[in-house]
Image 1 (spheres, rainbow, N blue to C red):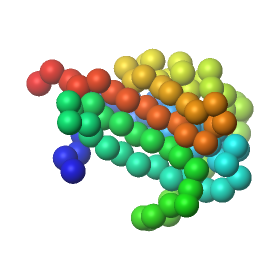
Image 2 (tube, helix red, strand yellow):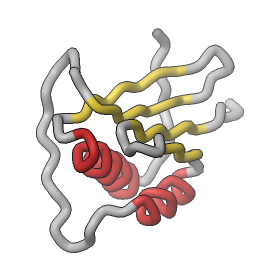
Image 3 (cartoon, rainbow, N blue to C red):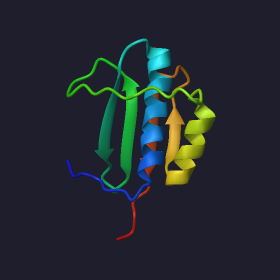
Amino acid sequence: TPGCELALEPRVATALVGIGVELVARHAGAPPCIGIDVSPDGQCKLTVSAGPCQGEQIVLPGRSLVQPTARCAEAAARATGARLTRTEDGSRFELVWPRRAE
């Protein structure tokens, strides 16, 4: 599928993905999976969900200064222009960036 390229502040984007991973892992009790997709209308979507996973395993460092919360994730998502949704049970964390005009 076509990739998506976004102009994001790397530290904010990394923190946002890390918070999503920690929130899902906390509720899932298993390593979460990260997926990236592009919708037919050009929206970029990043999903963190409870396993089982396929693909390459990666390790992200834990955040020790601030407890990751949904409010932190929402603030970071707004800073990147993304819409954040989470399932009620915490097993899925999804970010959607609108299609960018070229």
